Length: 326
Image (cartoon, rainbow, N blue to C red):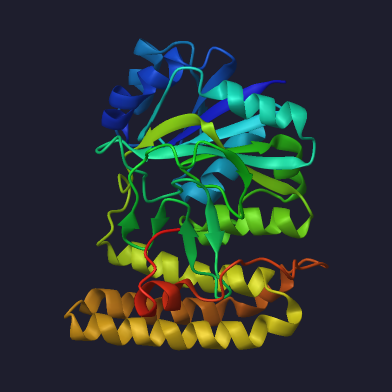
């Protein structure tokens, strides 16, 4: 089984200096690639000088996360793609449990390791934690992270289990399935494209797994921090894209409408907090959604999974019932 670890980079020399050594040192079973999104810093010359074993793929433009990987992976020959953020530190033998999962489970298409916080290594990391799920309205949450509540790691998720989505921070996928699904949706640019891809894989009846015997550490927020209006825009817009593409037909209008109402409430909250740039980001997200609604409707597959959620509303559970842990 041929594994390719592919790191997408855009002006990330400092991150590469800090984190690439762990990937190269602990990934003897794989070929390591740097997919460069037309960086203007000296990332490529740094890799060429210090890590000659790392193969470099040069994208013509900064395509963002989604299309950046789509373009780069055209040049990668492997059975399994390991898509790893540039701000990830991997551990010894991190690949072995993942490889065993793919070898033993032919219907498993996507796998995520345990993702801990690089800055607080005994806590889970926001983006993925112990494996992802969504509620009926498309709000994502994780084992080990619900909204802003993050659990300490005491071994409670050292298991292997089926999940709904795997984090793009460290995302393993069979190359054949990636090709079948036409990769990430380039319209997303960044944020939630991995949830959309996982949902489409689920609609094709593939299995997505979490394996807690493999551990990585993720910084998070190295590209866009949590307070970025651009991140707000991408998250609100891409959630609507994802729901429109993947919801069961009989639920599509009701859930998208209700999600828009919730978005409106979030916008009012930004208003009262004085976060006007975030309010405008929500409005901009909705206008973009309306503009591309027909395109997203045309992307719907012939089959949509009906049982895609375990909890009706994670918002209700968290904010009303005060259930803050998975």
